[in-house]
Image (cartoon, rainbow, N blue to C red):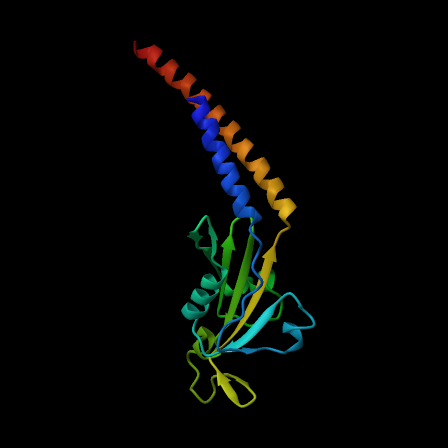
Length: 194
């Protein structure tokens, strides 16, 4: 029994090691979109990308998830998606940026991409405005539905391996301790009734 558990933990450790060793993909571009050349999207924040696009939220998030998907041993591993309040954009992306939605596409222990979307025509704060007074995005005489800002958050391979190497033994020791505490409690309870 103990050998089986050790083999299972060793396999999980090795698969996790392979998962963490896969190189992080570069920040994806949004297809059929125009790259923003505004200073806040280039010089001031060189690690970020922004695009003007006609695509809605669902399409943008789906495309970025597809382009971020990794595979191990032929199995595709889709990323997790976390949804945040637009007010948190200043914390996770940058200050002074408009936002309708903020989502994070995450590969735990590896990397993530924050996706900030600004769709002024669909913004709740402008819902009572008439179509003429509602703001819109226009660049080079082309009207766009949204401006999407992407901000990557990555970690070094060494830090990933270090964290993984600390998590698994900690988990093993926690489960061992939990097993011992349950064994004692159950034994004491049975003793009372027998």
